[in-house]
Image (cartoon, rainbow, N blue to C red):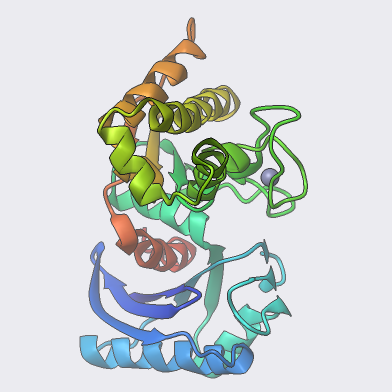
Length: 300
Ligand SMILES: [Zn+2]
């Protein structure tokens, strides 16, 4: 038996048939700029193409989407990168367009499921996934389920407070991990230090060459990741932590060493779960979307 995963992004839609723990066929199309119903039609069509390529009729669709979700009603509350996606009943509309049951998950939770079942945390009973890129996201998986919480805000690890009174965050509060550890956060610091625009690519090159200013900026960001992870261990006690995202995976070994050192410092006297790097890269979104459906129909 098989299910379909759909990874909906701001620029592209990937649909894949998933069976036997792997993607069997994959179709990728641009996300229609018109948004709304055009996105629904594009997803249903990509799902049909993926099924035709694999020669199967899937049982269900798992959909990974950006933006906060109302899981109970299958509604995207808002997705800034897709037109018309405010209070958008994506689950019902995709069910109508595809004729298949649809299970919706946010993209960070989907990636957490993928790393749990098929990536760096496979074999663990519980795992915490944290991704550090232009934002900080993640998910906690336990007993084959990703924690959504009572209101769909479980696993929003980017907005734990790591520096009270610190820089403003996109969520409207201040001192969140996301306001201190992401690419944009480092670029803001770099702008203040170098008195000009410095992108993360240049910053990382300077950091890896050992430049003092770049080291201060990047190691400080790593420090806050370590603090955040240590706090999350005390909340969830996962068997394994998986760290992913463009910043965490590309900053370099000195960055990871600082994350580790801080993590262990703030877990002195506690059991520190192993910290592993994500293995699935950009496929995590599609695999996780498929796993969302596979878990619901009892194929995992
Ligand atoms: Zn925040």
